[in-house]
Length: 168
Image 1 (cartoon, rainbow, N blue to C red):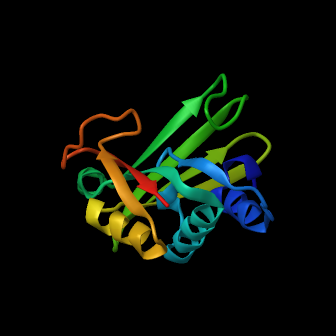
Image 2: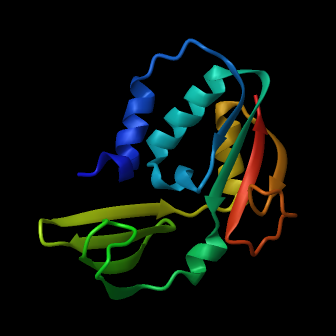
């Protein structure tokens, strides 16, 4: 398993950290929030909330229900003779994209090289704006602003992503 690509490994290391510091600002972007289970999301939001100073902010983004609705189940393959995203040397990537209940998808990428066969399971949960706001409010956050992306684009209900600026 490549620990650099395993979000659960990163998440577990975050939980194991014994931070004593407080912060004014925290960021969780690239829609990483959606790869966590509901319990993991509650835990990480609680930890961030705890480590923020009063008035501290959290910028969070996530994939939307509109993106989930546009998600296409399919299977593809790619031959990379000179390497590529998954490896620096020659490989074949077999990819399957699957939809599940509760607005969850799986991108299953199996990388086949001369040395090994490695599957990567990329799970994502997609959220409505209201659902994510409720999860944040349950922890104690207040909503400062809602955007279509972390660059601050004006919120559009049909956007593929939503970014929310939260305050402790």
